[in-house]
Length: 357
Ligand code: UDP
Image (cartoon, rainbow, N blue to C red; front, side, top):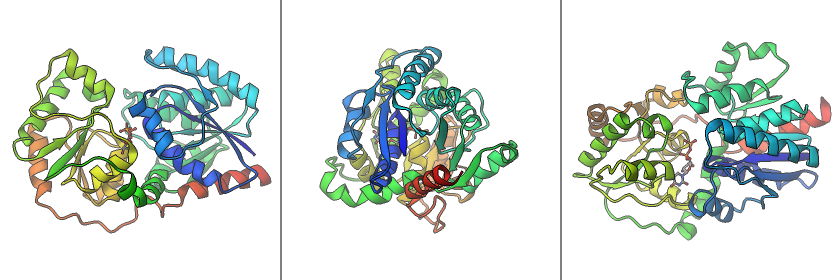
């Protein structure tokens, strides 16, 4: 069986690392990796391939720095060429980026089966590029690997059960990644931070492309920096907004870090503040509270379990919630995202579908 894996952005490298490890257990499965180039430099891409031993990329399409339409269009064209050349049995796509949609669309038009990992998630905000990508990708996939029961329910309520598509709750491959790679934090993480700190990331377009929202977030972080160290690895998009608008930070941000450093930073933090999808769950995996600086989240089970709180981009609300959660002891013993073997379930499913259907 030949699987063509499409990746392009940081969280996809992490998810693909977990699945590639599972693929490696099978001698008769051949994986070909396509990197669209959406994230491309040392700190946003190379470090993950090196540290997480992701197999070599066969095709690097080097497509980045374009508008959404141009980026997705160029990826579509190039991925089509790769599919025609490689003739895979499956095209495997992850999450919700332009690379996800372009990969799924190119395959679907050539009648090659698409497997979508992290299917069924919804923010119900169709203005988000991520929501557009995930809704459209789900609709043209042959098998939908959902990370949670909520994701399965979302698909059912959209009528997916009446379509000829397989829907499976396999748990979250990011949990696999955390469980496997956290064993090596001691050997591989290099970052050293003394004292109490908050781990912060912020890069989502709804915050960085809206200066009012972004300034509210920075206002809250500047205030929190009077009490805590702020450890804020800056996404390139966020860095650009800060520089272009001369936004004053009362703390010194750091460069993006590799996965082992990130795991260590989460583990030793007081709590996590973010607008990232992945980091909300990683905080939970490490038993840390998370304050999510968005108006909605796809990971609703974290909110239901009261280990994550939505603050929007309102400095008053952010500070109020930061004060509240700083006094709480983490309390949640439920297994929300599977048992750390999601990648293997995915591969076993693909083998079954290939052999028996
Ligand atoms: N991450 C990392 N280094 C950083 C910031 C994030 O390794 O400097 C990891 C983070 O731990 C998580 C993933 O990148 O596993 C999340 O990616 P991102 O926030 O870029 O995307 P999202 O999850 O929002 O799609």
